[in-house]
Image (tube, rainbow, N blue to C red; front, side):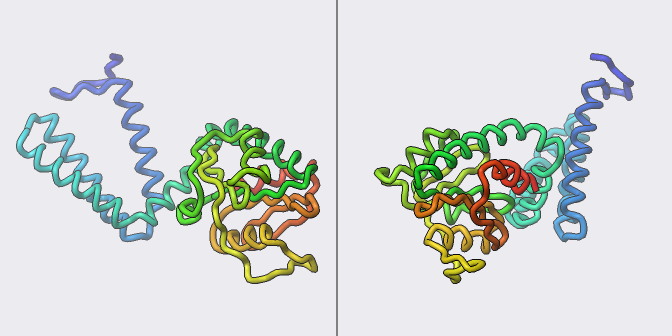
Length: 255
C-alpha cells in the first residue's frame, strides 16, 4: 500500500512512515520527561532491545528473537516498577499537552456544568457538599476511605449523594476523569480553625487540609451560609459568586 521504497526484503509504505513517526513522537516525549534522570539510560537499553527484536524478526532469526523478546518483557516490567515516579511525571506532562487537552476538553466541560448545576441548587438550599478534583497526584488513599461509586457525573447523582437523608452525604465525593469515583471519603483536617478572620467548619478544614497535602481542587458548599468556596494549594477562596465560579474552576483545572 503506497510503497515509498524497498530495501531488499523490507517494504516501507506510507502507513509504515506514519507508524514510525508516531513512535518517534512518543519516544521523544518520554525522553523529554526523563532527561537528566537515571531512568534515561534504562530507556536507551529498552529502545535498543526493541530495535534488535525488530531486526531478528525481520531476518527470521527465531531463536534469537525469542531470547530478545523474553529479556525485553522482563526489562519492561522492571522499568515500570523501578521508575514509577518518572513514569507518572511523563504521564502528567502528556495530560497537560495541547493535543490531550483538546480531546478531553468537551467531556471536562460537561463534568463542570453538571457539577456546578448541582452546586447552585445545594447552595440555594443550604445543603453541605465537599467535592474533590484530583490533579497531578494520586489520591487512592483518600478514595479507599470512602464507598466506591464509579458512575458518570450528573447533577441528579450529586444531589442524591449530598441529600441529608443519604447515608453517603457525610464526607467528600472524588471526581476523577469525568467519573464519580467514590463518595463519603474522609479528608485530613487542617490544623487551623480560622482563615482570614472566618471560623472554619469541618468541611472547610477538610478541604484546606487535603489541598495542603495533595495537588487537588476541593469545592465546598457551606451548610450554614450556603457559601461556595474553593481550596487549592493550601489556600481557600471563600464565598465565590456563582457567576464567577465556572471560569475560576475551569482555570484551576486546566493548569
